[in-house]
Length: 293
Image 1 (cartoon, rainbow, N blue to C red):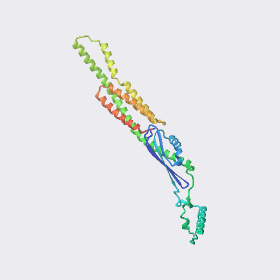
Image 2: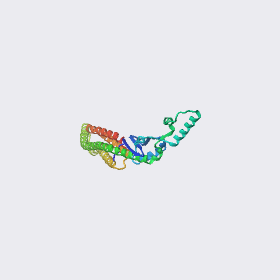
Image 3: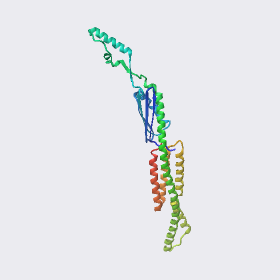
Image 4: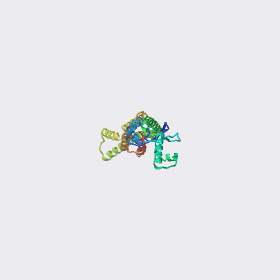
């Protein structure tokens, strides 16, 4: 199962007039890297967040952003502290008495003291960590689902390219068999003509042996068999639940090695053309593999 390394996930949760929103962005990386933008009170939670993410995601550079909106459903965000109001009233009254001011103490005088107000929500953010964790888990699930959807698109493209390589291998195999017969016949005729012109007696057994050795050096059967084996293993690994992008990269390297050997053994321009096409498809597969876990 192919899973993309890039994606975006988000989730939100409202608890006691507080809204927690989490956004996750993932880009390519050889390992799992997690960077978080959190309120100071949660600065010690980064390792715990990474652990939550690693439960579903194995590779990629993940950025985590947590935002908190307070009192989202309330038009009043502050409240008055009656005790402090009374204390300030007494203070104003004592000042009035000491100075002989006759003016009446009014509400506007008391409202000048900001200490009489306090935020309506006095809950400690740390108390909401369990709810925030659930929000992060939901965002991770959303990210995973998106990565999975993109992975299906990648798998479709990679499968098409691997199929194209396999078809060209079949064509190359048939052409190679024909070329070997033609090459052997041409070389036999050429050697016989040279021997005839030199006026010496030919050792047919020795001649046949040398031609067989030359044919073996041109034979690509083993390389084709190994290449097909790598392709089958590649396909099987794409369907595995526990996918390793590194394993698929290794198989691509081995497949590339076999194609290069086929190219070095070939003495046919037709086969060389198919080799070039196979290598082009393989390069595109390698590029796509950089985007998967």
